[in-house]
Length: 187
Length: 187
DNA sequence: TGATTAGTGTACTGACCTGTATAGTACGCT
DNA sequence: AGCGTACTATACAGGTCAGTACACTAATCA
Image 1 (cartoon, helix red, strand yellow):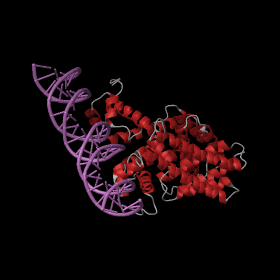
Image 2: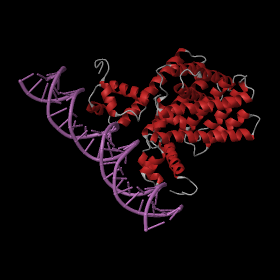
Image 3: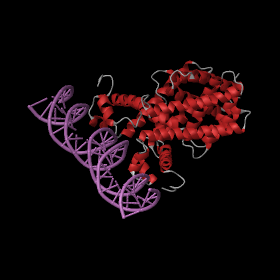
Image 4: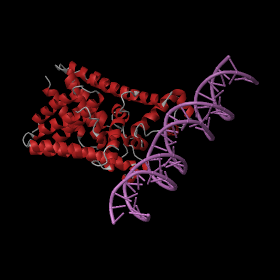
């Protein structure tokens, strides 16, 4: 492990696992791979996480926290024109070369069964993002913030997929333009 | 197997596999499961398909053909207002309770590595859908059909994901509304 | 010094994976 | 009757999966 003093073992493991989940996919990443990449013993992983599923759920949680925190920081810094600020922040997030897709979408696809805890958590986070957008819309005086939020989240999720599938396709810019049109058209 | 006279063995296998891929996920569906569900011997599967990967690719191809054919039929039946016809057709496709997501998106997520044949085929089909939309846009006299097509495809893919994650969320209707706004705003 | 704690390394279990080998059966055609 | 084809059933190879057992080392702290 690189830096045991500043980074706790638990965080280190979660970080390595997150990176592998994001780049290779969740199901395609075995526990042995995580252990090897983290340079630790398997027992250590299972000391901090009771199962691979727990690791996955915490990975989703972490990504959600990061996204959420980034958005809130931007929104706090720019109190007016919240909706555009939010859209710009999300699009920059997607445009980052390190972006590997929204983890909750990927996890949802990899765990399609509603009984799965991973599936449930994914759905929750998708709804949370939508409700964050809705709050911004409400603050901007939009009459039916939930509807606009849904529409914007479609654009956002679509842009994330498109940009993942074909980097530099222009999806981000066109999504931003479309968002502006939809925002302007919302009562 | 149910009906060997009207359905060839090969089609039967592909049909069973497609159903399992769509409902359980591709990686989560083992060859043994397909074989058991189809009521055949494993050797028979490998007589018709040289690998699981080939089965996956043909599954994607089949779904793409179905979607494409459905759209063309609708477009042929309604020569004017092609863009709205197309959007309506896609949204009905998604609203179908049997709809389990666009297979090319799910496959792309399950096979994130660009080297994978499944990944490449998925990207191709995503682009093909976009170019179908672009043609309709061009026929409708839109100035920059590729841009509008990209925006509409974001909405479509987003709506597919949202409807998958939460049935009856209204995503479809709001996506349709958003599409109308974007189409009206396109030069 | 001695005990506790954190972590390592290796080997293992039992299940599941894709793909193959092999022997046998059912049936139609000539 | 004899042959070829299509398919089945079972077993297996070789690998990977998640998760556990156990003996070991190194460091900390009383």
